[in-house]
Amino acid sequence: MAINASSRPALPSLRSRLLIAAAVWLLGTTLAAGYLVPSFIKSYLVEQEKQQLYLYLDELTALTEVNSSGQLLTPSPLSNPRFQQPYSGLYWTMKNHETELRSRSLWDTRITGNTKKGFKGPNKQSLLVVERQFRLPEADEPIELVIAANQDRLLETLQKLTHSLWFILAMSAGGTLLLIWLQVSWSLLPLKGLQKKLKLVRDGELSELTGTYPAEIRPVVDDLNALLFHYQELLERARQHAGNLSHALKTPIAVLNNEVANLPIDERRKLSPSLQQLQQHIDYHLGRARMAGAANILAAKTAPSPRVDAISMAMDKVYAHRGVVLVNELDSELMVAVEKRDLDEIIGNVIENGYKWAHGLIRVHHRDENAQTLCIIVEDDGPGIDDDGYESVLKRGVRLDETTPGTGLGLNIVHELTHSYRGKLTLSRSSLGGLKVELLLPKPRQ
Image 1 (cartoon, rainbow, N blue to C red):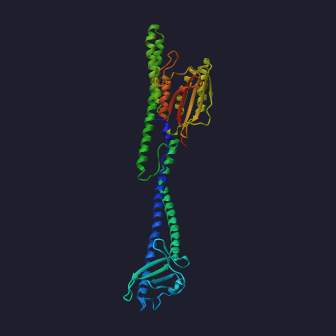
Image 2 (cartoon, rainbow, N blue to C red):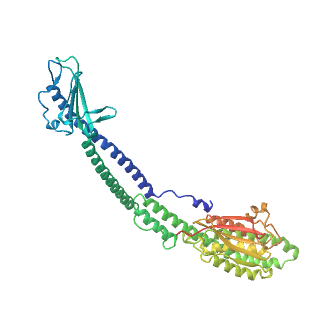
Image 3 (tube, helix red, strand yellow):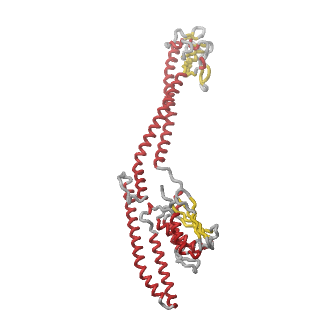
């Protein structure tokens, strides 16, 4: 997998997800409570007020009389003195086809409006109204009674209560969210500690994860430690085997090359290709063994610019007869998460390839891909490679020009080493006319 897969957008953190879920839940419950509770309270208060008005309605019904002329009479006032006080907020009216009586509290006004639009009283008071029709034996027509009460005070009280309720709900929701944040932060502290320990492991300061962790995290820590230990063991073993193989084969091959050099030309031509092929196989597999990475690949960090200068100095001596000039445009502060020996292997093979083919100029520069990756670009002004040869030249042992010294392993090793660091090797035509090699490598994690 190429390293650009790490540039995918990250999911929200666990803390953010938990807090968002809690905030959505608290918002829903707060809004529901803020709208439903006042509605319930209003219904309750209105119902209580109506019950009192019905008592007055019953009292007024009992006091109502009709004289011999069919006119309505109320011989005595209602028990509540507010019905006698002008604009007091308690009112009644009574009427039939001949008479209309009003409480003294209405003074010179009437109750107006209807059930749909609401009722209005003196000074445009909003009224809560109960009504009744009944008959008396002395009257032929039904009598209509209306008892009304000013509900402005009730609505004002309800408004104050609603404001207080919203304030209490907001404070409660904020306090609950704060407590949830503290709970989530405290619960995630072990993960934060684990992240710090992993950074120390990555930086090479620790070889394993240490500390005490909750039961849910402990199995993951144990598995990571086992994986780190297994990786270190395999890596060390691979390096030891590679070194042992190198020393074991070096002397016999040198002896065989010396002996073949003393043979007649015909026999030398028969044996030399086989020895060269044997040397190629050894170089290839030793190169793959070196690809195992650094002793602590998590802590690998190398500045490519000094390595390019060092490799360039060596190549200037080896290929002095070609007069090639290398221009290093890399910033000295650039870093890649690649072990030093592996970076030398990667850049060294690419630069050596440039020294072999360039007419006179090699240019090394870079391009920032994103926060996680860096692209090192090596271009030359040589003949380059045909478009259909980019893929085949990366295969093991493939050489497009047999007249130029080499094993055909360089770009293949570069390709596999780059891939082992989850990077990418791309070949294309350079603006200088030759080959353009793009090495996409990871940056060290901060």
